[in-house]
Image 1 (cartoon, rainbow, N blue to C red):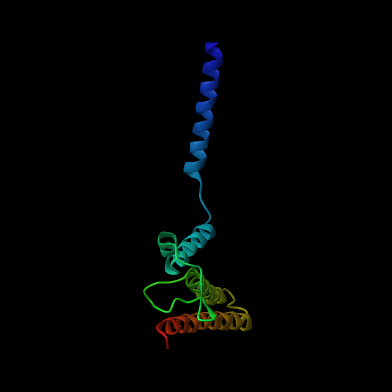
Image 2: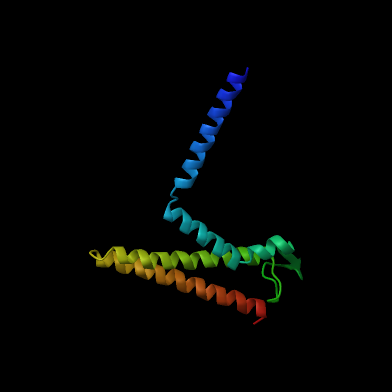
Length: 139
């Protein structure tokens, strides 16, 4: 009986050691790490932490219409956060498109088009974010 137990324990320690070696020598992809970092940043900038802690309403039906943007800057609905996260993501996609345009140095037309698409996405994101702030201020 003791031989059987010793064999199981030794094979268990070997598999744990092998698992530890795999984990300690793993090299995660830089793409995956950067996507995770960007997603966390967008979540935090969009107010995701506020939504988790305060648990606000998704939206409100008031005065015969649906309010998706809270009328003050001090609080927000969940739809405020979703709109902000989408617009931040749009801006980041625009920045990535502008960066990717530098890869097409020998194809100037394609580089120029990618750069323009990036600028348009970034400007749309900025304009819509400013518009949502103005709507929340009541202007």
